[in-house]
Figure 1 (spheres, helix red, strand yellow):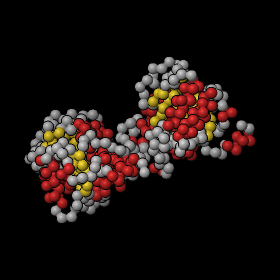
Figure 2: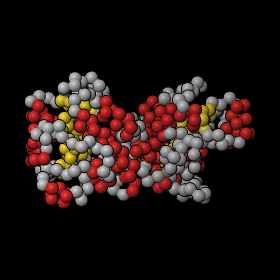
Figure 3: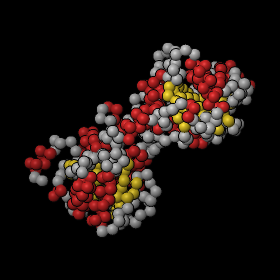
Figure 4: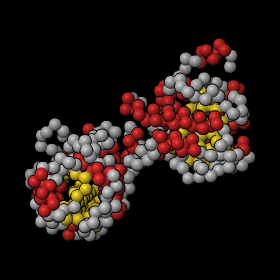
Length: 256
Length: 224
């Protein structure tokens, strides 16, 4: 058995030991898989994402720039979103950074409901109504042109910052109003379909994976929580989508 | 090698479609490409040993310099590292002593190590290894013997069937670096790729083949 194989069996995401939240210390990360599935639609497979990310990070021998525990996958029977909100709140209150591996977008929605007073940095192709309506502003990363006019109006009225995928790929990645603390939501559908096909959303006008990594890595926010959703690993046999998720997460933890 | 033997070998897939030859065929200035089927000794990753075979299967006769030959494969002993290194070093030494330039294709980076030792023995001095990622490539005297290290793991993920990193060089950037390498390139090792053996590996195999061609052309040019 080689090192990578041994690591796959004994370790969680990026080599972190599996363990309970109570074993985490302040400053640690707590990686939690929430394998929820999208509600219908032609593209599915998000429930496979947490374990696929663990497997891929093991194969690549990824090392997280932080200590912590892999808390395993959340049991999705019953009121799982309520349990998730409670767990995220507990972790943040204890100084532990939740890294939540979805799952569908409902996973990130639950994380954000647990942290209603924080600004959100949302890397996603299309602005979401529930984010626009939050009390705190959202910084939009990688929007494509496919927004209804009323959503653009709301974003403009609230003076939210946004950059399109094209602007970011062309190097216009300067965000002026970044707060010290925020929540990061990465919907893998923000990546262009031609670069990484393993997303539930089809986004032909999306970002390059390496742009996503560099843009998130350049943000100096102290991330209070990170959620990754929309990854459908079985749709990308080359694994670029998983690789993009892993490298973006590492970049966020390294600089944030 | 006689004509009859050459006709028989013409049916064997060879690197870039070049003629197949033996050690006794080598003359000074010739470029000898050899396969290296060992991937368990240095930065081990199973499957890298099949690169040479894959490149031969994917090769078509093209515009390759006339003095390039496929020397076959070096004999390897992957389960006996001491015997292995001594055997690889002596085989590489025999090629370089003939005055030919040598390209070792496939496997892990242990081939580069052995090639370095062999070149040092033949040249009687340290022979610098120039990585294809650049750096000192443009600053060497024309006559300085060097070994070119072409680590295909430096290719960006988009070119690979099983990427391990997003960023990296494109094949065109790698080829430009190879062409721009100064000095007297007496040997090269191309390694670090475990190609997918089905259709998924088409892109990386074609990229590796184009890079091999660039290496053969650079070695055929001699001092620069």
